[in-house]
Length: 599
Image (cartoon, rainbow, N blue to C red):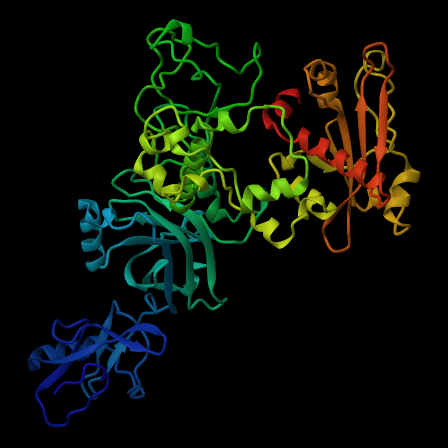
């Protein structure tokens, strides 16, 4: 039997000479040596006529026999044969093998919660077949470096299909194998093509086996099907670069990804897209239904207003400046900004329960006084533990009552089928842990950062604080918050000047934004408003602590400007003034649109 990896054989009594053939059809032309794939040579006995041997002997220089050890060379372009010793002589080094590293990619895809009905669809059946064929996801490894010898061209990507390799109840794992040359360079990005007919939520991609260690990609993004959009998704490594320091091999992909996110301002947006393009609010009316429902666009120079995501819907027939909303489609939201399925279901259920509370007509019999307040704190607690009792069905106007006749079964199911549970609210988790958590200064500071408008808080860069409003109309510009007040509240740990220098003093400033509206709001019966400033100190633990709150009222009704500073206190009166001041600040956080428009 002929051994394919044997390079040196010597037969004294034979009329056959061995000639080296590359990759013979019944042996194959590759062998594995160590971690690298090394191409080897195989030999076959061929008949070699005597007269041909003499002519070849005259043409060649006979070299001494080499050692009987295989050399890791690939295919040779020129090969000579020594007749006496039958040695293969390779006189070229053109295709000497360079090292190759075996890399395994592990792709983690999150399972959706569509449930049983999605498994019955035709697309799901085709996707399952795709998984069985082992071509679920196409991955392409991208080098961070360019070719030095080819005029700075990008290196060709390394492609491989990922096959399904297991998973659990929350995710599915796909794996693929690559052969990466040692001169490929550092891997900086991965191109992903979803071979399924439905989108998938890609969580992570991890490359194992590289000399520098595992390379991790935090994706956390929806990847569209190639049948919806043939453009491959681009994911970069977790390593961040400044624009000027971006590796040369990734610059084109960075620009391409930015262009994909911006869009071109044309066409109708589709649900699987991730385009962040913006437009004015020209869809708040419905002129096609009735001209009485025509509304002017919000946005632009005449009516400044924050922008919305551009949808590209066709214009209204009755008003060419308005978009038609009656197309039966949902509002476009970039795919990665949409609610998850669990959050969508939870939000819809809570919204339906909230609407139920509004629509119950029996509430009119319970709440006769619209200005009725809670006399004690335990009355608020009773909303979660006891709820409000509705009148019996016999007291309702209809024979079966509103809850029995008008509500669908779904609403009954959400309310637990018990009409007395309709007005019993779910206790917040924070209140379960601490009944008076909303009293705490720490919670006040946390809600400021994690609340409706967290971007309003900013670093204090100037001291003392001053207003930019007209002093003739709104009163003195100087703030009532002084260095003495702040130094006292900090407790001597650091001075105001040093805190500003070390970036430890922050401000939530609604003074100039709300002060022009204070007099208008106060003209409404039972309503009040203040312009507010709140100072926070960054503690060594990395949390914010409120130091002082300034409430201001402009000159009105013949009275001068009024302002007062409130600080944390445990005095029986001051503690409640401090809590009321915090309530006024939280009231200023309730509407983001007002803040943005005023800015």
